[in-house]
Image 1 (cartoon, rainbow, N blue to C red):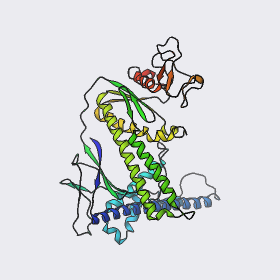
Image 2 (spheres, rainbow, N blue to C red):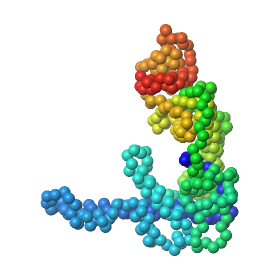
Image 3 (cartoon, rainbow, N blue to C red):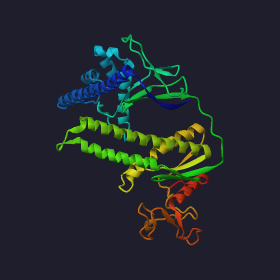
Image 4 (tube, rainbow, N blue to C red):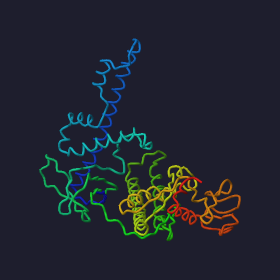
Length: 425
């Protein structure tokens, strides 16, 4: 079984809009209340232990075992967990909460527990500490595991206290399967969406072609065996020009009489909606390009070689950090990885220290020292950043200017038949 997620745009009437908005608010309320309770429970436990230890330090202790007093303190102040938080908040529920689905509350507390678990997981150093949700955030949402799909319509869970008619949402396309997991509903720019993770059987493998390729990732374009994929087309560049224009407008509308006060004005909100719509347009264009390009790769090639890039480190560079961010290096690898698993294709990831850019694909000579090619080219020989010149007299490309990206792509292809070269040279 694999999971394929489809996102549908919902078109609710005025009554269902209020229902969706109230569930978004309830999810945010549950998260913030659970986070506050979690922090208070943790602080109470630490404070009780600290006060007890200060008193015990004045007394001699022969053994390091827990005393009865310490056991009682730990029992009265347990370690916070999502189940303890859920049980405590359930006991103190208010009357208005009984009119809303309880599963929305439970899923919010479960996600809070997962967020704390990921925060303390050393294998995920980049995971941040859980924060309080804001009602001013551009994206609001909730999760529900009791929604149903019937006759091509999606129905929310109906609370017991509601006795009125309950309308569904017509889906724009047929569901992929009758078996699906927890549905995520969210709201952006006054539009409502639902992401449904369908559980389907394993897709059939793509037919074998006997071909293989390497993909050299660059800012604005990806090089592969049969050409290039332009990931920064003119349509996307035009959208980013609009984004730049709207950002300037938004910054001007924030200032009123020399003070930042205009964040709640109608003009400010109108400009912000335009900016969010432009960002959504850019996201859709990029996602469409990545999906089509990765599908083409897994359809035409059996083995695909890509680079293992340190994207976070590259974004620290001031030369092309914005272009790297817009080229979606990480998103490309993520999509290609699961599609290769789906369709039985082989994905080879080159070592981070494999010199695909500095190695000559014809003779194997690796440039070192002042011979290396950087983002600004090579100062010693006066070559540009996109030119590769081999200075080995025995090489067939001696003193010839070769496209650096094509040379790097050929070096990646070599790893298909010679995996022993996949290391630092």
